[in-house]
Image: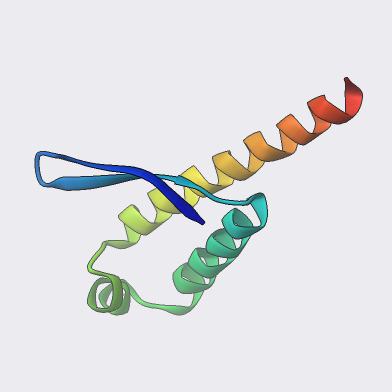
Length: 78
């Protein structure tokens, strides 16, 4: 993983990062495990985020993973 840029908007710090599709898969699997094994309270205590927030991050990772797969297919077909 490589951090390209960071910036702060209001109270949110954003990071632009370069990561491999394998790393995306690892993060995705880790969050799936968290959601399946931890209660709402455990998630909030460990991560400072709600279950809904973690689910939103997971959806973003799933979309990124899908986009990577589609890009691989396009390059194979080209």
